[in-house]
Image 1 (cartoon, rainbow, N blue to C red):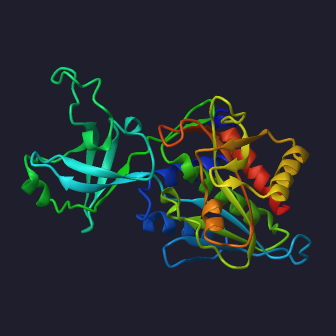
Image 2: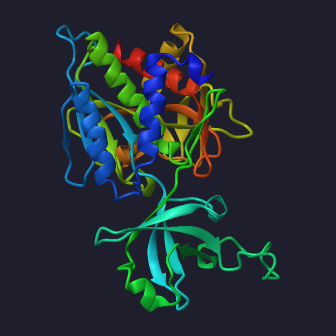
Image 3: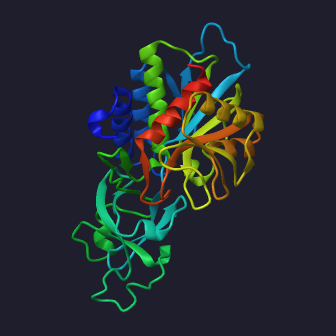
Length: 352
């Protein structure tokens, strides 16, 4: 779908997604992205508050005549992304790092990045192997792409560790990866961090819809935007009044899966086990009622904030949906149609 054919709702979704993916937010380094989401929710008339560990909870009142299940419906997406952290500085001024979140080193080789010091400075660099040129190193092609063989070349005139220390770069500083966002005339969105800022954009689009139409869900809703999902504990605490918890994350795409970038995926089971049977069935029924393009799949290498909530001991029903994302935790891609299918399924579940 070309940019010229976007509806106002689609246009908003693409623009807010581009804004979000370009705000650095590796797990734990999320103050700016959370404040941006809070301000955007306020723009549509919804108040938010922070949890102690920095997650955001957006309050969405229910309709005057609540006619659904008792209790509050929770929706969740995560604004934290993959990233890295400075481990040490080499004698040659190259930066050694450790991963924040799980990804292949091959997926970040050659990536432009930023180093965010704890004194408020930001520097740019490039992620490379220790043997980055076939003109110089015999093993450039075959070197194992492991973190011990990776380093960051700073865009600063540094020759040794003392030069880097003078820039106030230290172990423990966060490293973010450039998003490389691009929206194509055919409706594809190429970008890092679609996991899971695409879902945050979908939820903000739902808030925009509620604001502009004056509609309200059939029961109270709390949207949890978590900031530690990529390291496993984003949704480990949720408000106690939530009785159903729906994760809006991404749909994995693979050889034996039926989802793709144009569909909304409904996950029946992931690495944490099966999701709630009745809640999943209801999502499938709504997708059928609305003639949505959807897929039901199993993701054995996947976990969500609902998984974290259940492991945290919360007594609730949980399910997982999301737009299909190709090459997840790599150079990701989705399609505006998949985003809209996900948006429509959420509206259906809210009863609006």
